[in-house]
Length: 151
Image (tube, helix red, strand yellow):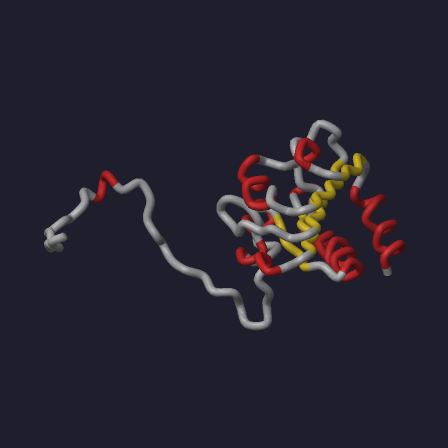
């Protein structure tokens, strides 16, 4: 077969996406895509100070902390910790969703987990549709009990 070189310049208006930059994992940080166990925190934690509680749960489980997009958008965790369509796609053995409702964009990034555990106070949260185990309760009551159990 003959190989020919063609001059081609696509119309920029026809291209619907563009690369705006690259981000590297910060020195000393982790790649959540490599974690076997993830504890992911969502908007349900309400305030930045409450991330420490979920980090303690992650530590007790030997897990890596990750998050949904609102946590990153608020500047509470770095972008490389974000799970979802605009973050990272992860496939851990265990994924614990704490205070995450289960928006389609988030689920796209974590539905490949082997086992999904969801903690949310809304029994109708979409996360329960894909969870293997669900706890419908206030995370501020449940998480301290889990920490005590696993420490």
